[in-house]
Amino acid sequence: MQTIIYHNPNCGTSRKVLAALQEAGLEPRIVDYLKTPPDRETLEATLRKMGKNVRDILRKRGTPYEELGLDNPAVTDDEIFDAIAQHPILIERPIVVIGDRAALCRPAEVVETLIS
Image (cartoon, rainbow, N blue to C red; front, side):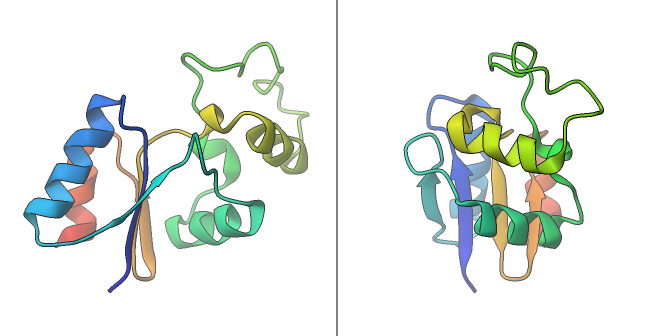
């Protein structure tokens, strides 16, 4: 079963989730999303698997979230996807995809629901 982690190696939570996947015997494809961000189509497909919308995966801390005005409810999903394309740091991490299921694994323990 294909496993993908959208990973930031500088993030402790992301490293912990990657270790949990590997300890469970999974060999995830590791996507350093800051260097190789998912395109919009991939992100939309992942969100569908998660049952979430694009606002649900926005990272606020340490990003241009506020300066871009993304906290404004009038900002459209298209505008958010455009902002993510320009600033992939806006994607909260880590996101794990296992087959047809996906989750934002923050806190790290969320990954257990995908593994089991």
